[in-house]
Length: 327
Image (tube, rainbow, N blue to C red; front, side, top):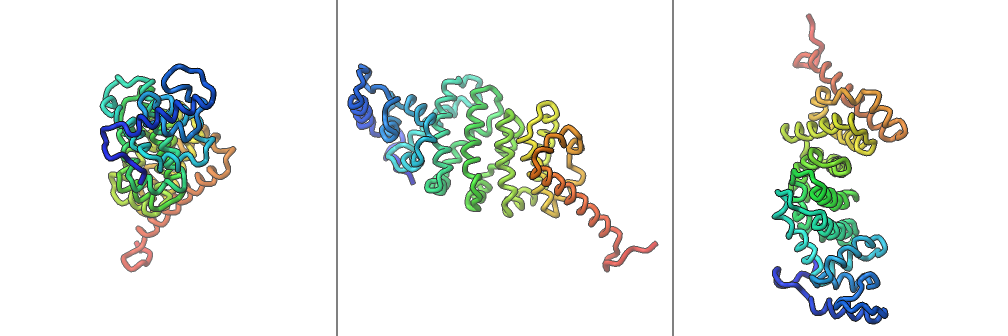
């Protein structure tokens, strides 16, 4: 687990962070008279330390988020540095009270999104992914996925939070899928598929797809009828909206979700009646022509549904001993 401060109410290492940042700015020859100097020239480890100071935190969050791809070891530094994970979680929790109101500003949302971007970095790194999950850090993101407000500040938080979960599922790991299933991620994804904008819908559908690709995840989604119907309703609703705003990426993930559902004998029987007719629409087929892999998935989906229906009809034409019915 990351090194967290003894108290959840204090600001850890403020004096130390201020001194380190000021010293770094002086060493770089800065003439800035501000107490904390110009952070744009500060090293990554000093920026991480600057997160612990409320005076330098916002700028440090911005710079670390913007340049996170330039430091391969940033996730490890964030995870193991004293107080940093606490600081990021504190930033996240401070906007909870605004999630059910339209008062959330873009500035406040952007600041939290910078903190979430650093959490995504930790979630994606092979050394910190499992500890991040075992510490149940993703649970702090679920309130952002549960909001129904569609304004930009809320959408930014929704999308960036989905990015953190997406980073977890990107690498096939049964332990990650089991964790997400236990914490009921699927209803949150369905909420995002319903109220989110195009990119949020795409990432949420990708997460559901990755869950369905896991044997336990597929069983979880199909074993309860209400859960299965909730998923198919969300997929169908997105298909209807695709007629107005076509998206090849979203359509690809929708088809792959349907394909995985069709691999469950129990679900496949129902899919014969639930597949949107618009999947056979020429406009949607045209979106797939340039992607042979997705077109192949689509054709396999149709075969699965057709074959299952044929087997069902054959079984109904047999008596209790398995012989064809006569008369």
